[in-house]
Amino acid sequence: MVSISLPKHSLPSLLPTHKPRNPSSQNLPILSMSSQSQFHGLKFSQSSSLSIPSSSSSSSLTKTTIFAKVSKGQVPSSFTLKDQDGNTVSLSKFKGKPVVVYFYPADESPSCTKQACAFRDSYEKFKKAGAEVIGISGDDPSSHKAFAKKNRLPFTLLSDEGNKIRNEWGVPADLFGTLPGRQTYVLDKKGMVQLIYNNQFQPEKHIDETLKLLQSL
Image 1 (tube, helix red, strand yellow):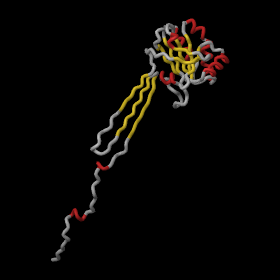
Image 2 (cartoon, helix red, strand yellow; image 1 turned 180 degrees about the vertical axis):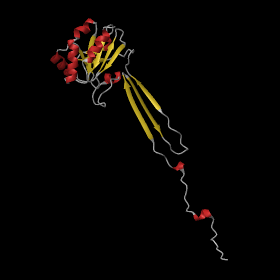
Image 3 (cartoon, helix red, strand yellow; image 1 turned 135 degrees about the horizontal axis):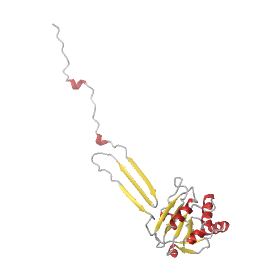
Image 4 (cartoon, one colour; image 1 turned 90 degrees about the vertical axis):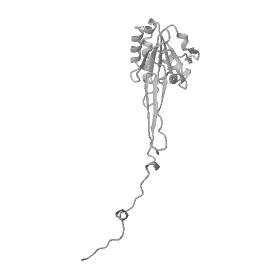
């Protein structure tokens, strides 16, 4: 009988050895999410982060911030800006009568000219409703003066250089933030916002919507 002798090794010692990886020594990638939305004067921004580091570190917290802008039913704070003649004009001056405040991108652009002329052509209807019309853009007073003279505009244009009031009122920009927004507000006799209308590419619709609201006040 033939006998076979094996080396004195246990089975595990014949297998290749591997050092186990410690999952706690590696950090998984950090995922981040940010979203931002705007809706008629309310701007909601949210930033959150999710991280899965070592088991010893604490989880991150989600932070939410809401920026309140001018919204329907609100009485916005008064502001003072220069008009096309260089005179200072305050919003509070018009309290006691309805006011149409419309923000537009710039003097002399085709759409802004069309909108301004539509307000001009319907100006008697606004007067009949007892309302004042105020146009606001970031152009300086001299630009406003030339724009008003060229197009025979009978209403006030205010210069919001630096877009401070536009930002405070929360007028949303268009085309991924590259084009200043076109937004109209109708304030009643008490200064309360009754309508917010936004339409960048149909400027004449602003006149129809504001008159419709004014006639119901």
